[in-house]
Image 1 (cartoon, each protein chain N blue to C red):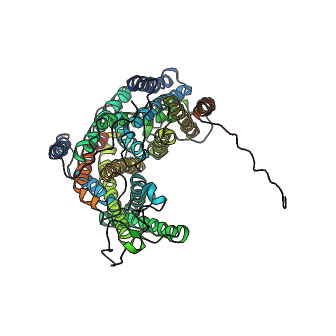
Image 2: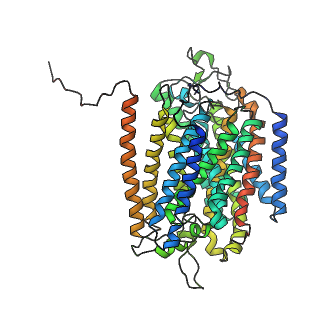
Image 3: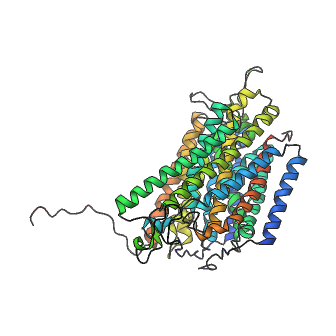
Amino acid sequence: MTAKMEASAGAISENTLMIYGIVVALVGTYLTYLNVVTGMAVFSFFGGIGAIAAIWWGSDTIKHLCSYGLGTGVPSAGMVAFGAGAIAMIAGTKFGMASPIVTLILAAIIGAVIGYIANNVINMNIPVMIFSLMKLSIVGALTMLGFAAMCTGTFMFNGLVIGGMTLSMEPAGEAAAGGAQTFMVTVLPEFAGSLIGGSALAVIFFLGAMALQHPFNACLGPNESQDRTLMLAIEVGFLSMFVVAVMSYAFLDMMAATVGLIISLIGWFYSYKQYIALSKRDAYAWLDAKPIIEVGGHE
Amino acid sequence: MSALGGKAAGGEGINPTGSVVGIVILLVSIAATYALGFSIVPLIGIIIGGALIGFGVHFVPVGGAPAAMGQAPGIATGVAMLAAGAGLAGLFGGAWAYEATGDFAVAVAGGAVGGGLMMAITCLMVNATYVFAMGIPAASGKIAKDPITGDTFPEYKSQGTEGHGLPFISFFGGVVGGFIAGLGGTLIYIELLDVYHAGLPAIMQANPEAIEPLAVSLAGIFAIGFFLVNAVLAAYNITGTIEGPHDPKFKRVPRAVIGCAVASAFCGLISMLIVLNTGM
């Protein structure tokens, strides 16, 4: 477990990545509010784009943290990011329009506390520990918020807990846009059919955690290069987004969910081709696999 | 920028300043919970649960990649994965028991047995794989004699390894660790569930029966989050591999208990903000 991991010097600096990651994630999440403005749910996919931006930035942060040799493997960093991020994200959605910003601030505070504990109480003594765990918690929280917004069409608490889950193919635009289905006053809302009430959020939790921990875990090694790792992050991000798009059929109308599905498929296809091209660039030699030639019985 | 820094220091002993600041954070979290008008009993339960998870994880024999190659004793995966497996199994067991009986003691015991059972099955199958598939005997490299069975190890240990397989003391540690971690995870879940049962109907303006699935889901997702945070903090304390309660690294356990208690206190405070009436 003490294999030497080196962080490659990348063309994009860590701070630039952080700024792009946070801005795109926040803007993407806020763009899902267009659902409410226009009354259509087709803008939900912006949440997924925001989540991918967060994952893209987070995979670089994980690289810097794990190059110190935590001894626990790369996935543990992804797990702690989403453990802290889930707490911040659910608490943050309570704040209406300010939810994405409050989620970011809450995640930063939780990350700082956990980082301080890891660094000073548990004596890890890693210089970047506190700041890295702060960033990773933000990544976890924004990824979950983005995917949740893509799945349900809203980033507010009421929309996430009051049931919009329907498998009928009727337009559920109002449910997606307003975040709540219209009920008679006496009829109780269907909490069990919502993203959180139906525990669909747990799926998003692990979809995001896998997408965050995988890129550096797969690419680490002596000739790890930043653009390849980041391209893999985008590729797994789109793969997770695809699953979220499939989940969103239960919450959104047919067209909105299909738009998300098509965008994630196109994005995945493009980033996968790019990643293969970068892998071929970095490889010493690229030998296409062929079936083993059978020489025959007695020759 | 390549080869940033060196190996993590991860020194022995307790850092006094850090621990004092940590305990201050814990007390401030409790005080803030009280000031916001919540009962502090659930938070105390959450803190105890978190500390139990941190404590329990240290019993689990984690071998990592060297164990997969038969060069170190333990289960061949990382701490976070094992702890998540045992803890979530315990959590599901406990949650089910709470749903079925509504009795606190039965539910906590159910969670503990669920976690312990999961680890017992894992350890058994790991040893079956080691002995019958890889053909290696169980031998610890850290001690000469098993403290429970009295089996001796040096004559079975291959040269150039730190031991291999899963000796009885490690198996025992795994079951105890799963038991304690499952108990801690279930405790956190039940405390959170009680908070949400009491608080959610008021803020959502719904009756308690309708809110039931939401309370269960919220408590469950938060409990998973708490569990992973605590398990990874314990993993950072172990820095990689541990053989079980007989390993010298086990002496580091007080740090993890303090750390997990502080982290649970703070995260517990945040998770209670859900039922705070913010007027939005």
